[in-house]
Length: 221
Ligand SMILES: Cc1cc2nc3c(=O)[nH]c(=O)nc-3n(C[C@H](O)[C@H](O)[C@H](O)COP(=O)(O)O)c2cc1C
Image 1 (cartoon, rainbow, N blue to C red):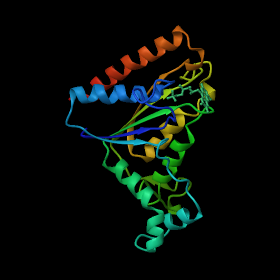
Image 2: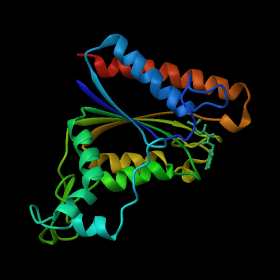
Image 3: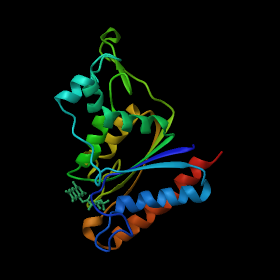
Image 4: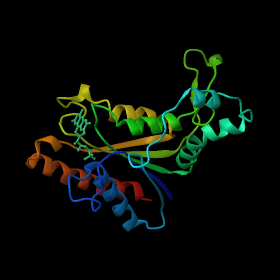
């Protein structure tokens, strides 16, 4: 795996950028990248901070351009799709996509959803053909690994947990990840942020250990 696309989506600063409440999900992402680079420093990392540099929302103009036959876009429509083209190329080049995300209102932050809306595109990430019957969509990207690192204020969102059914973050990113070409999906999360007690400290420490172990597994020849 030579190319990582690293996407952050918390509005909070990363560690080192501010002394006030810094982003836990961003710091887990930094830990993943630092651990990875210690073991394989030839990896190229493309980084996007979606909160600092938010994707545009898709619009009527965007839809019209995205559904125009290949080669049929006007110069103006091509400009409407520029951001989508750029994000798509970054995804296409990546072997591993690292997404870090806070849980916001039990789902992903709006900037991350906006990024998915820009990236997932007809004849780029999927094809659509009604001749296929009730399942007209076929995926176009394959062979990637998706790692999701999350932070939540409450707890128990994992399978079997007390809030499993309230979790619309991990399952949603996992599903959309298949459209990014992710054939393997790994999720590691820190919980309890709102309780600010020892459970939170343990949860962060545990997430960091799991990240180190995941990096070792992913880099195993
Ligand atoms: C707007 C907003 C919505 C939130 N919604 C939830 C939620 O639905 N469930 C939850 O467990 N925590 C929720 N939280 C808490 C965050 O998930 C928690 O603070 C997390 O650490 C944020 O990640 P970050 O530190 O990387 O920014 C919310 C926080 C904010 C600011």
